[in-house]
Image 1 (cartoon, rainbow, N blue to C red):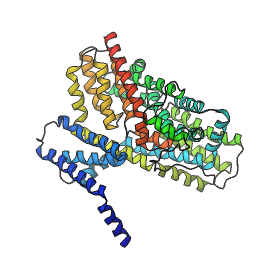
Image 2 (image 1 turned 180 degrees about the vertical axis):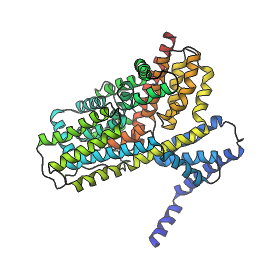
Image 3 (image 1 turned 45 degrees about the vertical axis):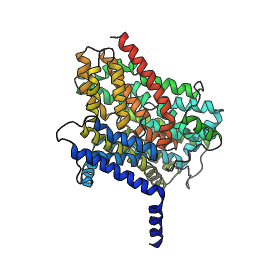
Image 4 (image 1 turned 90 degrees about the vertical axis):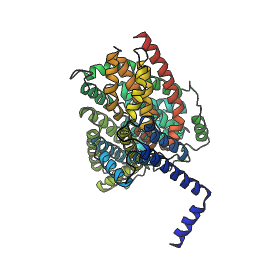
Length: 496
């Protein structure tokens, strides 16, 4: 007790403590002022952007995205209610946690973590990494192979972010590649690749959304989606860019250059990474030959992709089947006991708790932003500027900003499509081009946002903090976005 008292007093007397406390009180007072001066039943307008701006500033300053999201969420709740914040927070959190999407994400990511831990603990992942080292002879080759594996695993961006990075992490460490660059390559082949390949969770979701909103006739959503693939410009640009980086055509710049210099000095893991990595610990099972180890790694990976496709691109069912088959395989081989395998799966699930908490906090912020009317405000503010020629570029810019600020690469479009589609139809715009702009905005937001599910999971899989990954990746993503705007402006006028 005495030690605790000394710690509290030391913190209280720390020069930063007073500044932090004053800042928090000032933020609370400011948002409460917005609440008491707001006229009920009127739009929040530009003020709806403030909680998201607070999150972005805090994430940059503190480098802690989860805490920034929670504080931004409380700020939004003050604007909405101003009363019992705990009750409002509890109600919204319960609503978000009750969502089928959130339950799916928790189960998929947790079980994926369990599968990766099982591969690590059995030593099979180590066998694959050792085999890769015999084939890959340079840093450039390691980067190119990583990008190629990311392109091949196109079924789901979560699968890409978690499975691919775990497969190659030891290889890239061996060639002194920073974890930030690994995360960038993985992230750049996750959402962008899933967008342009019609056999993915993204295609299934957006094709259904197009049908639900009457943009495509029943059963024709996928056909319209296919027609828009050539116009999903950001996804194409991001993929081209990442291969140019991997081949060394585009040199490291910005924060990535510093990260690579640190890795070349022998420290691939950034110093601010305080998360937990799944360690490759071989339990008391029998030793494997290299051939058996390779089979024991490749069989679950191939089965995971095949099973996900078989279950109509349902990664949850795919990973469940893969776990059952892998546990049975390892048990029959005498590689690991059933108890040890269950421990490994739970260890992997626990490793995913922090990134999952960040993803859930992002969904909570998105729910609060919806109540504030942020998405509607951004789109409706730009609607008067929309002409047939400018519509694709404006759709990309506006929704890219919304997705970047909310981390909701899917949920935003449930609100946005019913607003954008009638505008496009009213001015007789090319619908495939507009849909391409929508999907480009979605993939950019997922790619660039500091606290999106793709960013958080790519960082976790690679073994670096989400903020380190976001800072080093953002200049590349921004460059891709600028190129995309230019292409949409040209296409808007050419195809008008």
